[in-house]
Image (cartoon, rainbow, N blue to C red; front, side, top):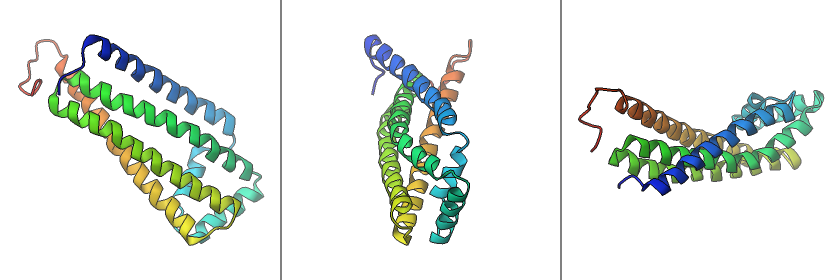
Length: 185
């Protein structure tokens, strides 16, 4: 798989920068919009393995007046899912193409679509959490949310690791006077 022509490469470059900037701005806006609720609070709920853990978190948030922030956080997360999927998708494609390595370019294509599976897992996780918050905390909802969160985070970490590898590969390839045998496979 060869790098795209200049016009397609420029389009991908712009998609990369736009989506990454939008994702970063959205994260900043979410912190402001959901304050005093923090992202770590919702991660605790995503990682609740038992109904007792989930119930105690809901009870704590109800007592602290944060339950509405929890609901807002989940609803806003549906928008963020689309944004982070687009940003990571573009990052996988763009960073892999910068390496000019055919194996990494193929892998970038794969990872760019794998992140969409993480987005699907995130949607299912959010729906399970909403069901627990708005109806009843059941083992199936808590377990589903937990399993989807683990799957989602695993895929996100793999794709981010891949992007980091591509970035390092690219950095090494642009060092003046350094010709590497693995630069073009």
